[in-house]
Length: 442
Image (cartoon, rainbow, N blue to C red; front, side, top):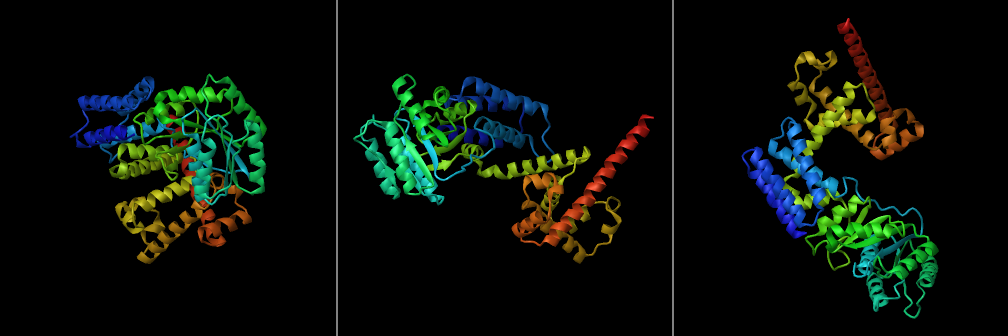
């Protein structure tokens, strides 16, 4: 991935170094982006669609107030790259039962057994007790490799080099792991290619026998855009729930593999980036793109853009007469970003302020600031359901929210009263606008 990172970092520097983004600079930047992605083996059609959408959006929209044309172009590139690498939703790991069973599948040489060890390491570090089972009766040394990984991690394992019945090995392994009371069981299988019907038949039999909670397909990222065909082929035979991409450190084609797999609808969960067990991480498209772009110097820009988007969303919701606790929270967060309340009030004309706020002294302003911070703590302890519909807040929920936010039930009820007051004001404002509209039409 180093080549892609180097190319995109140079692209960022080029945009930053431009005096302004004129027509010629925009075309150069988009061509450089196309070259970098094509070199990383990203599909040609996808590259074209990506750069076309960046160009159209850049020409169509004016940069938000306070954002330069250079920063806006960087922001668009960042967002579009995230979209082709999987979107902003972070991979999730949930063991919904004990023991939770994961079946690893993939072609020969993709790094399944090593990936089994890396996953075992990752889950062990999270406090789970993990067990490994090796069902590969084809590859010489598969059992020894898994045994060595398990012993290194000091976790239970099951191998049977004398058996040629992969299903029997899997079932006996499951029985052993249940006796060991493990939280997670990872079953490694033999490597297989799409034309190896016997091996594909075997994996179906293992799947039906062990009924895993999750099937993880291990893909070698050196395959580039061909990774999509592999994901689709396996998915026709067993339901693939998630993907483990290996060798992301040793190939310039990793971006192509990642983008093509995402396009199939598959969820990338883990990424392996080295030979050691600890060289594994939960996949996060946002962080991945940040590394590609050398995002250290761009983080502040992204925060500013996010803040502007949130403020625009709040204004739109208010103009439409929509108001819930989530809108209220966004309002307060936007206000706190502007600094102390006293300074904020100084920036506003006196005629814009409600009468009671025009005569507040410093102590009263400080008290208001403290209440705002307390209310934010309360709202951040609420579920999304509660923020969207505060009417569900009963005594039990209020007690839980108070405990989680380090406040009291009295504080939570104070927030609810303030929210109801604000909601009423927004409703009255909307009704006034409608009445004014009817008057103007007459």
